[in-house]
Length: 189
Image 1: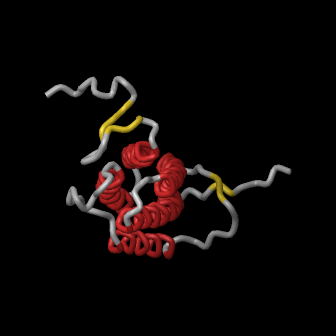
Image 2: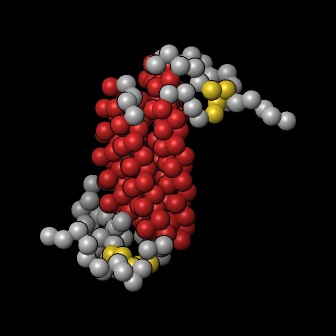
């Protein structure tokens, strides 16, 4: 089987179980940004983060494949796709609480930096926020008006919102584990 199909040479791509659309369509922007986030998490993991963070990020990378598949599909229920649900969101919240509880209180704003892993986690956080914005845009621009589609988008937005919070906490945890202080924001004016 060849990697290239040439079917996207005209600037369109297929959705899973749906029509071909422009490569800059809101749906493609949304799942493409989730894919980008997953790639950044791969960079984070290759940068050498603590084992507990690495294991957690491995699970999240697999969940992001589920999110991407759900976003790539106009009707995820008809295609019988795994969807992100309350249990995945609760796991993220539990991880936020556990990691944050082990950190010194945050007393000021911080800028991305410290260890390479922490800096990459900050990058992942910003890509995650962009993915969240893309899903919100998709939900507002989508021609799909079924309640199930709206519920699917809402679950994904919540998941990405929690994930970006977790990535912030994990950046601090990576620095803390390495004995490196977070980089405080210094007002320049």
